[in-house]
View 1 (cartoon, rainbow, N blue to C red):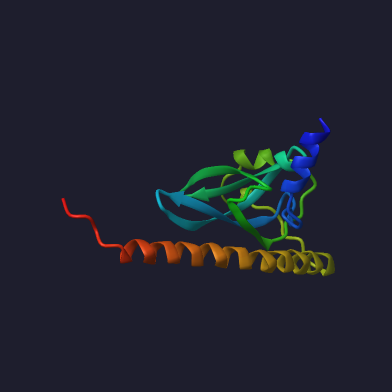
View 2 (view 1 turned 135 degrees about the vertical axis):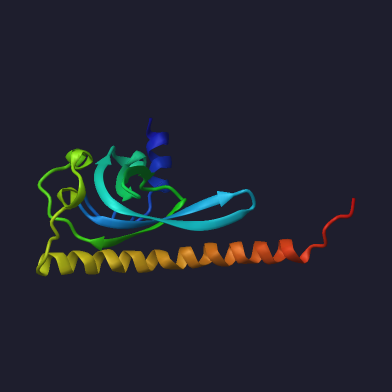
Length: 157
């Protein structure tokens, strides 16, 4: 049992959870399609954070073309490049599942304003800047792979 815990502790990243429930976030998620890699941004409201340790996940909800779309992301996944906080929400619940039933402006969460919010955003953005280097490395690696694939002559039949 202790072996599992030690392995899980090694996989944790510092500053991976720089947001809370009710925040509007942009999740930069690495997508691998065949040999190509790209980063897709999923922007929405964090409605839940579940579990503990390495298994911790968060659910992000957005409305796309009038349809509610939810996606669950693992916090410590290597595919989650960074999570950028756009707005700090003012909520009094740990899970915002009631947002699923709301339509239009009723589905919005009030924004937290003041010194607390600015300090929270500053802290969150500092953590996001630290992970930007990782995102740039992924982009450079993908660019190098694409250039290498283009340089190789195609085999004749």
